[in-house]
Amino acid sequence: TLELSGLVTKLESLGLGPIPQFSESHVLNKPLDVGRSYLAEILRNLTECDPNLAYKSIQVPNDIFTADLTVPLPKLSRGVYSQSFGDGLRRRFPSSPLFALPIQDGVHLRFMFNPRALPQLLLPYILDRGASYGKDRSIGLQDAETLHIGPKKLVVEFSSPNIASEFHTKHLRSTIYGAYIANQYECMGWEVIKFNYLGDWGKHLGLLGAGWEKFSSEEKFEADPVTHMLEVYNQINELFQPEKHASRAIRDAKRTGKEHGEDTAAIETQGLFAQRNAFFKKMEDGDEKALALWKRFRDASIEYYVRHYPSMNITFDEYSGESQVNSKTMDEVEELLKAKGISEESEGAWIVDLEKHGGKSGNVIIRDRDGSRAYSLRELAAILDRFRKYSFDKMIYVVANDHDLHFSRIKKILELLDMSELAQKLEHVNFNRSPHTSDHDQKLSDIIKEAKVSMHQSLQQNTDKAAILGDSDESAAKIGISALLAQVLSNRRSADHPLEMAKATSFERGSGPEFQYWYARLSSILATGSTDPAALSSEDFQSIEEETYTELLRILVQYPDITSAAFKTMEPSTLMHYLSSITDQLSVCFEAGESEEKPELSPAEYVLFEATRQVLENGMRLVGIRPVTRD
Ligand code: ARG
Image 1 (cartoon, rainbow, N blue to C red):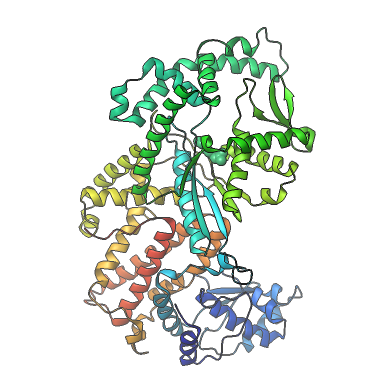
Image 2 (image 1 turned 120 degrees about the vertical axis):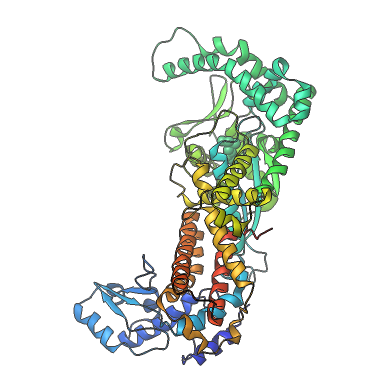
């Protein structure tokens, strides 16, 4: 890694003095902080303000093409801002090897790096840091040294599909966001444990069990277990719908205070309702036969998922699930809830009426009327189990907004249980549930296959791209995954986002294939030249002083700031937009080059494009997109 001494020597050779020290500045991780430090010192000298105030007043502009750094003057002058204050600063701004003269823009002063100094500082910086450029392990290691403990620990739960149900778009989004979040925390020095909390217990498995007796075929199960489970589930579920609706109608009527001649019990004690509940009750009571069948369902599902997630570059540390929650812990939680007077009996069920405990209205079911333990009880116990096993510093649930209410109620109950500290460690990183556009019984492997087929077509239509990327089956499969990932990641989490495969696999701006194309193109160009910045003389750098290159450098210098912003907001779309700004600028650079029919790259151009390739790679890997090289 880049040593401070190497950086200092570089800065000296540019005519700069020692780096001014600021506690917030991480000059070895963020080249922009080098600029911030020198700029803060200049501002302090000019205004005689507190050095930390000067440092804090420096911001990154919204549009990075207007400035590298910007200072809102009222911030610097503590509110007593006048036009003459700005004029004075600008006039007295000393000439600096690092900055061009500032420009005043309303109440902002805008600063740009000197185009001569920027490449000399930045290119060795990026190439020295290599794959670490944009990472900052010190965040996860905070306190580790002084307290003699390990890095901070994150448990992240994502994907979590339901056994025997289709893989919904919300599961796909959870999978892709979750994998990114895991990567992002690892890059920031955290230890990360990845959990898949399968929906492998509950009434829907009771329904599958009931359906199994009617519709299953051993032969079909052997041949393709997950497809067959889905078939049987859909068959029985269709028959079950009328009963479900009838019961819901009664429930709704009751809730709104309307008279209804019937009771839900009349429906729920008969037909498929009764069969479903009976099968699930057997599972809950430990009936051997029921459990043996259920175990076949679970094992086959896990075997399937272990096989398919890796083709998306995704793995899990633990395939947990609702069935895996410790039964003793559930007893413990239930006892506690009763003892503290938080839960109560209601029509044979056990519930928490949150309104009675200072929460918003709503009943949380702990135990159903038929005695089976409910989703929320499992959830509470799962939190205790995981905390006891991992003593995590944080646990993130990457789950759609259909769980917003659920998780806020779970936190509320933990608080009622005097476990506020634990509640504070939980974070629900949500996203819009999204319309579901697929056909009825979509599986993860169907999505993966569809991406590959669509990518193959796209490569056949774009022969110029295929010439660089290759169009074998294997390339199509890999690039197809990038397409899928990029489309999900480039939408803000709150956006409602249907999957559009043709668009995903196109080469339009911001698509996964587009990133792969530029990565491969750079790699092939770079295969023929030296990319060592130490071999460059200061004259060599002159060939990259023109504006198109300076703009590219100004994008590259921002990268570590972009990763820290994304780390704060857990919004990978920020990273995706950033990566698009790189490929946009690359196409400007290459168009300019092509029109002049420049035969060869200069030594400094090689180094610049190598640094660009490195940043592109780091960004792609961070979001989970593996660069594909020609096979
Ligand atoms: N299996 C659930 C679903 O498909 C998501 C699980 C969410 N995680 C949790 N800890 N409750 O909707």
